[in-house]
Length: 187
Image (cartoon, rainbow, N blue to C red):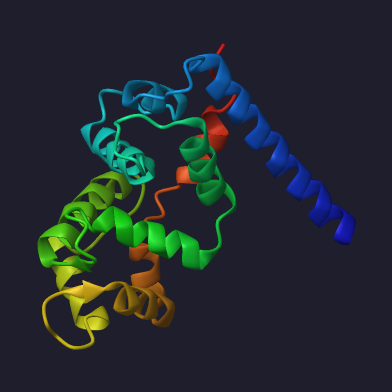
């Protein structure tokens, strides 16, 4: 069994290496712009929801806020998406929700991301709650002190206590699937 796990890990590393080669080929300047990021991830310009979601992803990895991803930011993004542990993925998800960067989530911030996920997932699953109902339920389950804001610790604890909340908060719209599916599409 150990050999199978090792082989699987090697494949992951090989896929990451392919994506890094794609970066170097597509971005010889060393800077990846949003339109190139969308092309690499295979986001169709016709899908407003996927486009807005990938823009949010892009900006969450642009740590120096220069509207490009350098190679280090790109590799960090790939590592998190493809191999990141649950805690790191939840911290990243929190950062994606926290649009104003104040370290707390209000209902507007949560509802904004829920609407995007809702529209993307609605295409593939049966979602019976509205974004407002989903947001209310998240706050009911996660906002421990009922102050109308969710801190990182409340976010982490709430996600790990409730599977339904976990599935919403970790922003699983198959980002790794997008990466793996599209890494070989470029010439």
